[in-house]
Length: 398
Figure 1 (cartoon, rainbow, N blue to C red):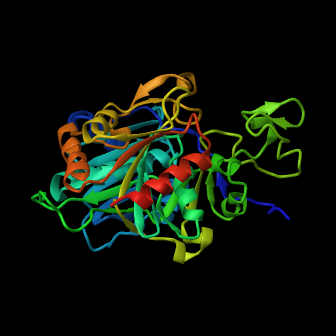
Figure 2: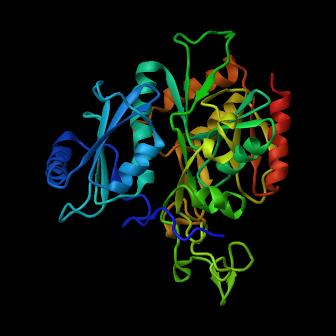
Figure 3: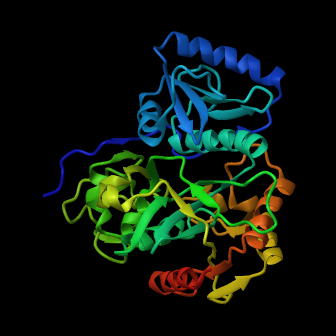
Protein backbone atom coordinates (compact mmCIF):
# COMPACT_ATOMS: atom_id res chain seq x y z
CA UNK A 1 0.00 0.00 0.00
CA UNK A 2 1.37 3.41 -0.94
CA UNK A 3 1.94 6.10 1.65
CA UNK A 4 -0.66 8.86 1.64
CA UNK A 5 1.82 11.68 2.30
CA UNK A 6 5.31 12.50 1.10
CA UNK A 7 7.87 14.76 2.78
CA UNK A 8 8.14 17.02 -0.25
CA UNK A 9 8.78 20.74 -0.68
CA UNK A 10 8.22 22.76 -3.87
CA UNK A 11 10.74 25.59 -4.13
CA UNK A 12 9.89 28.86 -5.85
CA UNK A 13 13.00 28.52 -8.06
CA UNK A 14 13.19 24.86 -8.99
CA UNK A 15 16.75 25.02 -10.32
CA UNK A 16 19.93 27.05 -9.94
CA UNK A 17 19.45 30.79 -10.11
CA UNK A 18 21.76 33.27 -11.80
CA UNK A 19 24.93 33.75 -9.81
CA UNK A 20 28.14 35.74 -9.60
CA UNK A 21 30.99 33.64 -8.20
CA UNK A 22 33.46 36.55 -8.09
CA UNK A 23 31.50 39.38 -6.50
CA UNK A 24 33.69 42.29 -5.31
CA UNK A 25 33.40 43.30 -1.67
CA UNK A 26 31.95 46.72 -2.53
CA UNK A 27 29.09 45.10 -4.47
CA UNK A 28 28.58 42.23 -2.05
CA UNK A 29 28.33 44.09 1.25
CA UNK A 30 25.21 46.20 0.47
CA UNK A 31 23.35 43.02 -0.53
CA UNK A 32 24.57 41.27 2.60
CA UNK A 33 23.26 44.12 4.78
CA UNK A 34 19.79 43.73 3.26
CA UNK A 35 19.88 39.96 3.70
CA UNK A 36 20.99 40.19 7.33
CA UNK A 37 18.19 42.64 8.13
CA UNK A 38 15.64 40.25 6.63
CA UNK A 39 17.15 37.32 8.51
CA UNK A 40 17.16 39.27 11.78
CA UNK A 41 13.43 39.98 11.56
CA UNK A 42 12.29 36.51 10.44
CA UNK A 43 13.78 34.14 12.98
CA UNK A 44 16.79 32.83 11.06
CA UNK A 45 18.53 29.60 12.02
CA UNK A 46 22.30 29.21 12.27
CA UNK A 47 23.67 25.77 11.41
CA UNK A 48 27.29 24.65 11.17
CA UNK A 49 28.52 21.75 9.03
CA UNK A 50 31.85 19.93 9.04
CA UNK A 51 33.09 19.31 5.49
CA UNK A 52 36.27 17.27 5.99
CA UNK A 53 37.44 19.57 8.75
CA UNK A 54 36.22 22.83 7.16
CA UNK A 55 33.40 24.45 9.13
CA UNK A 56 30.78 26.11 6.92
CA UNK A 57 27.93 28.00 8.60
CA UNK A 58 24.51 28.46 7.05
CA UNK A 59 22.29 31.27 8.29
CA UNK A 60 18.82 31.00 6.75
CA UNK A 61 15.14 31.78 7.28
CA UNK A 62 14.15 28.84 5.03
CA UNK A 63 12.99 25.82 7.02
CA UNK A 64 13.41 23.73 3.87
CA UNK A 65 17.07 24.62 3.44
CA UNK A 66 17.69 24.18 7.16
CA UNK A 67 16.14 20.70 7.12
CA UNK A 68 18.14 19.55 4.10
CA UNK A 69 21.35 21.11 5.43
CA UNK A 70 20.99 19.32 8.77
CA UNK A 71 20.24 16.01 7.06
CA UNK A 72 23.07 16.35 4.52
CA UNK A 73 26.18 17.17 6.58
CA UNK A 74 27.94 16.04 9.69
CA UNK A 75 27.38 18.67 12.36
CA UNK A 76 30.11 21.23 12.87
CA UNK A 77 31.43 22.07 16.33
CA UNK A 78 29.62 25.19 17.53
CA UNK A 79 32.67 26.18 19.58
CA UNK A 80 34.82 26.49 16.43
CA UNK A 81 34.62 29.66 14.38
CA UNK A 82 33.44 28.95 10.81
CA UNK A 83 35.91 29.06 7.97
CA UNK A 84 33.18 30.17 5.53
CA UNK A 85 29.57 31.37 5.72
CA UNK A 86 26.42 31.18 3.63
CA UNK A 87 23.54 33.61 4.19
CA UNK A 88 20.26 32.57 2.57
CA UNK A 89 17.34 34.96 2.90
CA UNK A 90 13.88 34.67 1.39
CA UNK A 91 11.41 37.53 1.22
CA UNK A 92 13.95 40.24 0.37
CA UNK A 93 11.87 42.77 -1.52
CA UNK A 94 12.89 44.14 -4.90
CA UNK A 95 15.53 41.48 -5.69
CA UNK A 96 15.04 38.63 -8.11
CA UNK A 97 16.27 35.14 -7.10
CA UNK A 98 20.06 35.26 -7.29
CA UNK A 99 23.29 34.03 -5.70
CA UNK A 100 26.61 35.72 -4.99
CA UNK A 101 30.01 34.59 -3.74
CA UNK A 102 32.69 36.95 -2.46
CA UNK A 103 36.09 35.19 -2.45
CA UNK A 104 37.67 37.96 -0.36
CA UNK A 105 35.16 37.37 2.44
CA UNK A 106 34.74 33.59 1.92
CA UNK A 107 31.01 34.28 2.11
CA UNK A 108 28.10 33.30 -0.14
CA UNK A 109 24.70 34.92 -0.36
CA UNK A 110 21.43 33.47 -1.64
CA UNK A 111 18.51 35.81 -2.13
CA UNK A 112 14.92 34.63 -2.59
CA UNK A 113 15.81 31.06 -3.54
CA UNK A 114 15.28 27.95 -1.44
CA UNK A 115 16.52 25.40 -3.99
CA UNK A 116 18.92 23.29 -1.94
CA UNK A 117 21.09 21.97 -4.76
CA UNK A 118 22.86 25.26 -5.41
CA UNK A 119 23.31 25.95 -1.70
CA UNK A 120 24.87 22.50 -1.21
CA UNK A 121 27.18 22.78 -4.21
CA UNK A 122 28.47 26.20 -3.18
CA UNK A 123 29.19 24.92 0.33
CA UNK A 124 31.29 22.18 -1.27
CA UNK A 125 33.01 24.73 -3.50
CA UNK A 126 33.83 27.02 -0.58
CA UNK A 127 35.35 24.16 1.38
CA UNK A 128 37.19 23.03 -1.76
CA UNK A 129 38.98 26.38 -2.10
CA UNK A 130 40.20 26.18 1.50
CA UNK A 131 41.27 22.53 1.29
CA UNK A 132 42.96 22.89 -2.08
CA UNK A 133 45.08 25.88 -1.15
CA UNK A 134 45.79 25.07 2.48
CA UNK A 135 45.74 21.28 2.68
CA UNK A 136 46.91 19.95 -0.72
CA UNK A 137 43.49 18.45 -1.38
CA UNK A 138 41.85 17.78 -4.75
CA UNK A 139 38.07 18.19 -4.98
CA UNK A 140 36.31 15.86 -7.41
CA UNK A 141 32.75 16.07 -8.68
CA UNK A 142 32.24 12.34 -8.81
CA UNK A 143 30.74 9.23 -7.29
CA UNK A 144 32.73 6.79 -5.16
CA UNK A 145 32.14 3.13 -4.42
CA UNK A 146 34.00 0.07 -3.14
CA UNK A 147 34.11 -3.36 -4.81
CA UNK A 148 36.03 -6.24 -3.22
CA UNK A 149 38.07 -3.68 -1.29
CA UNK A 150 38.98 -1.69 -4.41
CA UNK A 151 37.79 1.87 -4.87
CA UNK A 152 36.31 3.45 -7.98
CA UNK A 153 35.98 7.20 -8.56
CA UNK A 154 33.44 7.93 -11.30
CA UNK A 155 33.74 11.43 -12.80
CA UNK A 156 31.20 12.78 -15.24
CA UNK A 157 28.89 15.71 -15.98
CA UNK A 158 25.40 15.69 -14.50
CA UNK A 159 23.03 13.18 -16.03
CA UNK A 160 25.50 10.73 -17.61
CA UNK A 161 25.31 7.98 -14.99
CA UNK A 162 27.54 8.65 -11.95
CA UNK A 163 24.81 7.71 -9.49
CA UNK A 164 23.57 4.82 -11.63
CA UNK A 165 27.00 3.19 -11.82
CA UNK A 166 27.97 3.80 -8.21
CA UNK A 167 24.67 2.15 -7.27
CA UNK A 168 25.36 -0.82 -9.54
CA UNK A 169 28.58 -1.42 -7.58
CA UNK A 170 26.76 -0.80 -4.31
CA UNK A 171 24.03 -3.34 -5.10
CA UNK A 172 26.61 -6.04 -5.78
CA UNK A 173 27.01 -8.42 -2.83
CA UNK A 174 30.66 -7.37 -2.55
CA UNK A 175 30.05 -3.67 -3.13
CA UNK A 176 29.61 -0.67 -0.85
CA UNK A 177 28.57 2.95 -1.42
CA UNK A 178 30.65 5.94 -0.39
CA UNK A 179 29.11 8.94 -2.18
CA UNK A 180 27.36 9.86 -5.41
CA UNK A 181 28.47 13.45 -5.98
CA UNK A 182 31.74 14.60 -4.41
CA UNK A 183 35.06 13.43 -3.01
CA UNK A 184 38.08 15.07 -1.42
CA UNK A 185 41.47 13.47 -2.13
CA UNK A 186 44.34 14.65 0.09
CA UNK A 187 47.88 14.44 -1.32
CA UNK A 188 51.08 14.28 0.74
CA UNK A 189 53.14 17.45 0.68
CA UNK A 190 55.57 17.15 -0.99
CA UNK A 191 54.16 14.59 -3.41
CA UNK A 192 56.44 11.50 -3.39
CA UNK A 193 57.88 10.18 -6.65
CA UNK A 194 57.11 6.56 -5.70
CA UNK A 195 54.33 6.54 -3.07
CA UNK A 196 53.60 3.43 -1.02
CA UNK A 197 50.23 4.26 0.54
CA UNK A 198 47.19 4.61 -1.74
CA UNK A 199 45.34 7.87 -2.21
CA UNK A 200 42.02 7.95 -0.36
CA UNK A 201 38.81 9.57 -1.62
CA UNK A 202 36.74 10.84 1.31
CA UNK A 203 33.03 11.59 1.37
CA UNK A 204 32.06 14.96 2.93
CA UNK A 205 28.31 14.21 2.98
CA UNK A 206 26.48 11.81 5.26
CA UNK A 207 23.53 11.59 2.84
CA UNK A 208 22.99 11.28 -0.91
CA UNK A 209 21.33 14.24 -2.66
CA UNK A 210 20.01 12.30 -5.63
CA UNK A 211 18.08 13.04 -8.78
CA UNK A 212 14.80 11.38 -7.98
CA UNK A 213 14.39 10.39 -11.64
CA UNK A 214 16.89 7.58 -10.93
CA UNK A 215 13.89 5.69 -9.58
CA UNK A 216 12.78 5.26 -13.21
CA UNK A 217 15.69 2.89 -13.88
CA UNK A 218 15.68 1.40 -10.39
CA UNK A 219 12.05 0.86 -9.35
CA UNK A 220 13.02 -0.54 -5.94
CA UNK A 221 14.17 2.96 -4.94
CA UNK A 222 10.56 4.16 -4.70
CA UNK A 223 10.12 2.84 -1.16
CA UNK A 224 13.44 4.42 -0.14
CA UNK A 225 12.48 7.78 -1.62
CA UNK A 226 9.01 7.56 -0.06
CA UNK A 227 10.54 7.71 3.42
CA UNK A 228 13.16 10.37 2.59
CA UNK A 229 13.07 14.17 2.30
CA UNK A 230 12.14 15.26 -1.22
CA UNK A 231 12.42 18.48 -3.22
CA UNK A 232 10.21 19.41 -6.19
CA UNK A 233 8.72 15.95 -6.74
CA UNK A 234 5.64 16.09 -8.99
CA UNK A 235 2.43 15.58 -7.01
CA UNK A 236 -0.13 16.11 -9.80
CA UNK A 237 -0.45 14.44 -13.17
CA UNK A 238 -1.11 17.77 -14.90
CA UNK A 239 2.39 18.94 -13.89
CA UNK A 240 4.18 16.02 -15.58
CA UNK A 241 6.77 16.87 -18.27
CA UNK A 242 6.37 13.56 -20.12
CA UNK A 243 2.66 12.83 -20.71
CA UNK A 244 1.44 10.84 -23.71
CA UNK A 245 -2.29 10.70 -24.29
CA UNK A 246 -4.52 9.91 -21.34
CA UNK A 247 -2.49 7.33 -19.46
CA UNK A 248 0.97 6.79 -20.97
CA UNK A 249 4.45 8.10 -20.08
CA UNK A 250 7.06 8.99 -22.70
CA UNK A 251 9.86 8.62 -20.12
CA UNK A 252 9.12 4.95 -19.40
CA UNK A 253 7.05 3.98 -22.47
CA UNK A 254 4.60 2.50 -19.96
CA UNK A 255 1.53 3.52 -18.01
CA UNK A 256 1.51 6.75 -16.03
CA UNK A 257 1.96 6.08 -12.33
CA UNK A 258 -0.85 8.51 -11.54
CA UNK A 259 -3.18 6.34 -13.63
CA UNK A 260 -2.07 3.38 -11.53
CA UNK A 261 -3.33 5.12 -8.42
CA UNK A 262 -0.06 6.59 -7.13
CA UNK A 263 -0.02 10.07 -5.62
CA UNK A 264 3.38 11.28 -6.87
CA UNK A 265 5.94 10.55 -9.56
CA UNK A 266 9.69 10.72 -9.00
CA UNK A 267 10.59 11.17 -12.68
CA UNK A 268 7.88 13.52 -13.97
CA UNK A 269 10.21 16.53 -13.50
CA UNK A 270 13.86 16.33 -14.53
CA UNK A 271 15.25 18.32 -11.61
CA UNK A 272 13.41 16.86 -8.63
CA UNK A 273 15.68 15.64 -5.85
CA UNK A 274 15.71 13.44 -2.79
CA UNK A 275 17.98 13.42 0.26
CA UNK A 276 18.63 9.78 1.17
CA UNK A 277 20.39 8.49 4.26
CA UNK A 278 23.00 6.07 2.89
CA UNK A 279 22.43 3.51 5.63
CA UNK A 280 18.68 3.64 5.01
CA UNK A 281 19.09 1.84 1.69
CA UNK A 282 20.71 -1.48 2.62
CA UNK A 283 21.99 -0.94 6.13
CA UNK A 284 25.14 0.62 7.67
CA UNK A 285 27.28 -2.37 6.71
CA UNK A 286 27.03 -1.35 3.04
CA UNK A 287 28.32 2.18 3.65
CA UNK A 288 31.88 3.52 3.84
CA UNK A 289 33.15 7.08 4.26
CA UNK A 290 36.31 6.69 2.17
CA UNK A 291 37.68 4.45 -0.57
CA UNK A 292 41.18 3.91 -1.99
CA UNK A 293 41.62 5.46 -5.43
CA UNK A 294 42.26 2.30 -7.46
CA UNK A 295 40.43 3.32 -10.65
CA UNK A 296 39.16 6.53 -12.24
CA UNK A 297 36.22 6.16 -14.60
CA UNK A 298 35.14 8.97 -16.91
CA UNK A 299 31.71 8.82 -18.56
CA UNK A 300 30.45 10.33 -21.79
CA UNK A 301 27.24 9.81 -23.71
CA UNK A 302 27.18 9.97 -27.51
CA UNK A 303 26.34 7.70 -30.44
CA UNK A 304 29.77 7.34 -32.07
CA UNK A 305 32.63 6.97 -29.55
CA UNK A 306 33.97 3.49 -28.63
CA UNK A 307 32.38 1.84 -25.59
CA UNK A 308 35.69 1.90 -23.67
CA UNK A 309 39.08 3.60 -24.05
CA UNK A 310 42.00 3.36 -21.64
CA UNK A 311 43.50 6.84 -21.37
CA UNK A 312 47.03 8.07 -20.92
CA UNK A 313 47.53 10.71 -18.25
CA UNK A 314 47.77 13.43 -20.93
CA UNK A 315 44.55 12.25 -22.58
CA UNK A 316 42.69 12.06 -19.27
CA UNK A 317 43.82 15.51 -18.15
CA UNK A 318 42.94 17.01 -21.53
CA UNK A 319 39.42 15.56 -21.40
CA UNK A 320 38.93 16.60 -17.78
CA UNK A 321 40.25 20.13 -18.21
CA UNK A 322 38.16 20.72 -21.34
CA UNK A 323 35.04 19.24 -19.74
CA UNK A 324 32.99 19.02 -22.93
CA UNK A 325 29.55 17.48 -22.51
CA UNK A 326 25.99 17.50 -23.83
CA UNK A 327 23.43 19.22 -21.60
CA UNK A 328 20.82 16.59 -20.74
CA UNK A 329 17.25 17.17 -19.51
CA UNK A 330 17.28 18.33 -15.89
CA UNK A 331 20.97 19.28 -15.97
CA UNK A 332 20.58 22.90 -16.99
CA UNK A 333 18.17 25.46 -18.48
CA UNK A 334 15.62 23.77 -20.72
CA UNK A 335 16.59 25.88 -23.73
CA UNK A 336 20.12 24.39 -23.53
CA UNK A 337 19.08 20.74 -23.45
CA UNK A 338 20.75 18.82 -26.25
CA UNK A 339 23.47 21.46 -26.82
CA UNK A 340 27.19 21.12 -26.12
CA UNK A 341 28.69 22.93 -23.17
CA UNK A 342 31.92 22.99 -21.14
CA UNK A 343 32.48 22.28 -17.46
CA UNK A 344 36.21 22.30 -16.54
CA UNK A 345 37.10 19.12 -14.61
CA UNK A 346 33.40 18.21 -14.93
CA UNK A 347 33.03 20.22 -11.75
CA UNK A 348 30.55 23.12 -11.74
CA UNK A 349 30.96 23.56 -7.99
CA UNK A 350 34.48 25.02 -7.98
CA UNK A 351 34.17 28.65 -6.92
CA UNK A 352 37.89 29.47 -7.13
CA UNK A 353 39.19 27.64 -10.19
CA UNK A 354 42.93 26.93 -10.39
CA UNK A 355 43.54 24.85 -13.55
CA UNK A 356 47.28 24.41 -12.94
CA UNK A 357 46.74 23.04 -9.44
CA UNK A 358 43.93 20.74 -10.59
CA UNK A 359 46.13 19.39 -13.41
CA UNK A 360 49.02 18.85 -10.99
CA UNK A 361 46.87 16.75 -8.68
CA UNK A 362 45.37 14.62 -11.45
CA UNK A 363 48.78 14.09 -13.08
CA UNK A 364 50.22 12.90 -9.78
CA UNK A 365 47.27 10.53 -9.37
CA UNK A 366 47.76 9.01 -12.82
CA UNK A 367 51.58 9.03 -12.95
CA UNK A 368 52.95 8.90 -9.38
CA UNK A 369 50.25 6.61 -8.00
CA UNK A 370 49.73 4.89 -11.38
CA UNK A 371 45.95 4.96 -11.07
CA UNK A 372 44.40 3.71 -14.33
CA UNK A 373 41.80 5.87 -16.05
CA UNK A 374 39.19 4.63 -18.54
CA UNK A 375 36.42 6.49 -20.34
CA UNK A 376 33.17 4.66 -21.03
CA UNK A 377 30.50 5.70 -23.50
CA UNK A 378 27.10 5.12 -21.88
CA UNK A 379 25.43 6.12 -25.12
CA UNK A 380 26.38 2.96 -27.03
CA UNK A 381 26.07 0.31 -24.33
CA UNK A 382 23.53 -0.52 -21.69
CA UNK A 383 24.00 -0.02 -17.96
CA UNK A 384 24.92 -3.65 -17.31
CA UNK A 385 27.56 -3.73 -20.07
CA UNK A 386 29.22 -0.55 -18.78
CA UNK A 387 29.03 -1.89 -15.23
CA UNK A 388 30.77 -5.09 -16.31
CA UNK A 389 33.59 -3.00 -17.76
CA UNK A 390 34.01 -1.10 -14.48
CA UNK A 391 34.12 -4.34 -12.47
CA UNK A 392 36.65 -5.87 -14.87
CA UNK A 393 38.85 -2.75 -14.66
CA UNK A 394 38.69 -2.80 -10.86
CA UNK A 395 39.61 -6.47 -10.70
CA UNK A 396 42.61 -5.90 -12.99
CA UNK A 397 43.83 -2.69 -11.29
CA UNK A 398 47.12 -2.95 -9.41
